[in-house]
Length: 165
Picture (cartoon, rainbow, N blue to C red):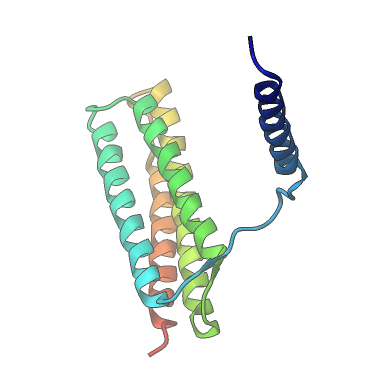
């Protein structure tokens, strides 16, 4: 049998837990997260490298799909994951506070990532087309893909040109 003191302590603990859980609900949830960068050059270089690794891996998988070494469904899953990763890079860029002299460089890199996401969407169109017919003509889609990659490269070059000296 519990003593009155034990019951009181248990009651206090339960009250504290209840109060804390209500406090979580009362805290505003729409508070934006902002990243503050101490070295904009290193941060941007890291994002560019991360994107390069992701893009290279996805390109390899696309080639494997075209060679029949992986299924279009498998490629679509990979492309969707890559799309999500690229979106997270874009969000980080948008939510990062950089010195004003870096804004153009960061903005151009975000545009490069958006163009790359358009490329990814077109690769998914190809995968869907190949899923229905492994011998389908994909020349039109590949032309669009080339345009998106060219655009992504141009924005990346603009990002590099906009870097402060």
